[in-house]
Amino acid sequence: MQAGGAKSRTVLPGDYLCAPEEFMPGSLTYVRGGEVRAAVPGIVLYDYSSRRVIVKPFHRESPRPVAGSLVIGVVTSVKEDSATISILMDNKWRPFGTPFTGILHVSHASRQYTRSITDAVRLGDLVRVKVLRDTIPMHVSMRDAQLGVLAAYCSQCGALLVAEHGSNMLKCPRCGNTEPRKLAPDYMLRSRGRRRSGEAKK
Image (cartoon, rainbow, N blue to C red; front, side, top):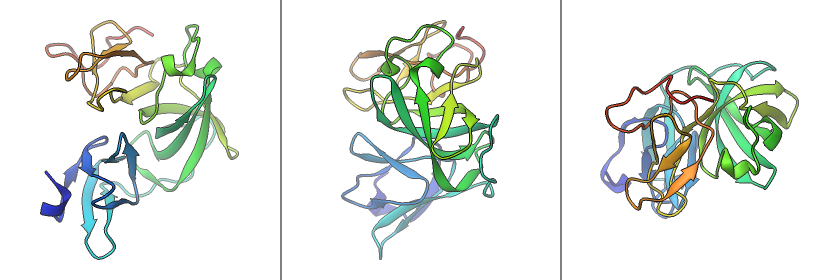
């Protein structure tokens, strides 16, 4: 559904909202591959006067993240040995009043040896991480089994990648591209006929 034809609708994390040329990304949205997407479950609102799109979350705001807590965010930049994450909400999908910056070092990306951070996460991925240090910028980890990528998009065509049973490799249903990730057990899109959680061994 194009943004110009709707005032509001229910969305889930990663849902397409519009092109940046139609509406500027606002609160609890992010840009991936030239598309504005929802960062949290809620109601998307298109402000035609300011030409801005925002997501109004279903849940009330959560307090500031603290060391030891699980949080959800979006990967906003990637280097060879680290990734920057915009921490948006707690593990119950309750947004924080403002985004927090988190740093994920390759040594904390997985319990398995990870040569490059892009073997675990890539730009635009929706991830669940654990806060190790809650001073800014926060240091985070994905080493535990319940942590990892919740949704990922193809680096070539932008489609939502599909997780195959028993593997951390993702496949694009549109162009056939395959990419590695360190997946959370509840990754959002798994191959048809498989259980959604508890399958991939970390």
